[in-house]
Length: 473
Ligand code: FCB
View (spheres, rainbow, N blue to C red):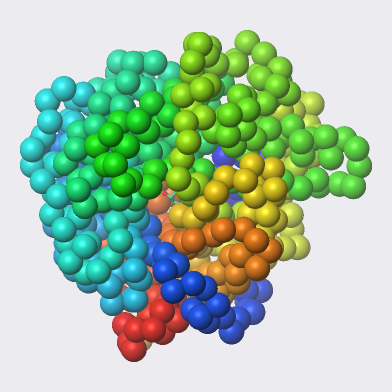
């Protein structure tokens, strides 16, 4: 049993078994989706760019964290990562070649504002200017995320997300980026997965900055959501025709046992995991049961904060990977007194994450029924399996391919049930620096040989090319 479930469950099932169990391949077709559906791949700056001290970039909390021995599997660092900073034209060619019409990426805050605020690094901003032009030249729609976890180290030293000033620094950063790129980028996301940057970063400690303090984590979480709300009017002023949203990681939560204790555990767990974000963003404030459970660790909220957080968005981004099965656990370190349970006899990815595509249908219909958020995009979905390159230089990632197909099928089902899902993004374009797992966990549609930086489109990427009407990849 896990003491705390962040994202690193540890399962001990043999790899072959996990892969062998993923066998269903579906006959889905692009025609089952509207012509203007957004099909894309997603990446994030820190995970692919490398070039961490080139052209004036200064460290983010992830540079600092990954340089400390013991924080990252094999002590990997993202100093080079996929060298995307130098190889981006080739990488965008791959996106085009696989038939996608959209590309989701994030901007590195410390590349644009090395100290977090103040002096703009022209070369850093120029990089994204060229990247956006390159995206458009290939007929792709750019989906820009402002914050995918790489807080400038200088701002962490000034208190990090628990400090309210960081929210205002984020708004300035949003202004700088949107003023420069807003003539070409119309699809904006403020944050990627506040759960991870706040709770895993400041409470669970598995992620940068590696703190373990629930009160600071909840304050960080509040400021992240606040900064989202405060940045929206700035984005709209700079980009009048922008479509703005936020990206959440959401999970269906199910009881481990068929009993009242576990059913109420589900409600409590859902409060911290899902309702905390969805309620606040949809104008309901934070869930009262979760605030009570947090007690003295609840965040300080100023007048007007909740109204700012509830500012209207144009779409909701949902990252879906797995469900959580929970049990009542009075001794848990979580304020919800719940514990995530490992299931033995279920399909799992190489990460130990359960493969549960029906959860995506459940999640989408539940969010629709409870919040009516308007258009929804699946901004990330994907799987780690231990890929190997065959003797012909091919990477036959059948497990990932089946995973993706089954989730696309789930999107189709949710659409048929009336949920306005208008996009699906596979995580990820490239194998990359998978945070605390370093290079050990490959999620790409494209295999990266980290010694040579050679890219090879895997079977999953070739399938996409076919599915999306490209002859070959
Ligand atoms: C998501 C993150 C993304 C990647 C995938 C596997 O939570 O947004 O950067 O790590 O998980």
